[in-house]
Length: 224
Image (tube, rainbow, N blue to C red; front, top):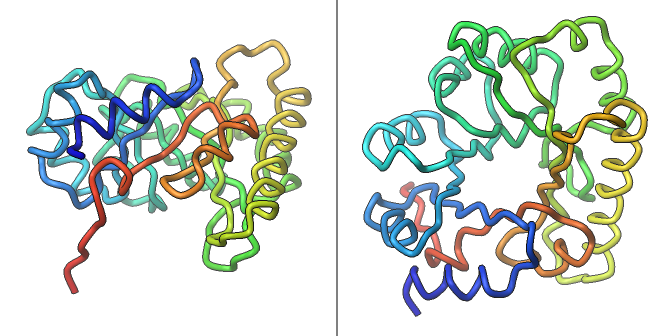
């Protein structure tokens, strides 16, 4: 099947209210346009330079999500246009996003990234660290950042029970943070979890946003 068919199949499977982020990192513009032609508008990139280049070259109604680990010194290159930053894992990064949002005269939407996997390689906060950030005077005074929800990646494993447990943990974190810090705030509503291998489990466990790449575009080939 081609890219267009893969997109349409995925969208027919996803529950209403679940956003499909087509992970287009390393993929050429033609592949993105093939998805665009059948109505896909949300794309995810994990390299700042590649994202900035694609933003310049592709239709302006695309909603660009940054899904990689974002370094503070790179925020300025995407602050003027990025729709959602998925992987915020420190107060320092939030402060930088707020500062660059102010310069660009816009509010930048962010998700807090949590470490839910049993792997050491993945970035992310724990619940106490997140509460410390959200309860800080520095966060409360930010005017150009909007925290819209949470994000996390499950362990890369075939153990379905473990994956479900980790997704459930992220849903519980979302519920606790919502209750404590965003009770009256409808914009805190996103749970970004689930990728090509586990998005169906993620949706069953409460995901509102799945990040799917290889299922749509085929396998990636990284240059050495």
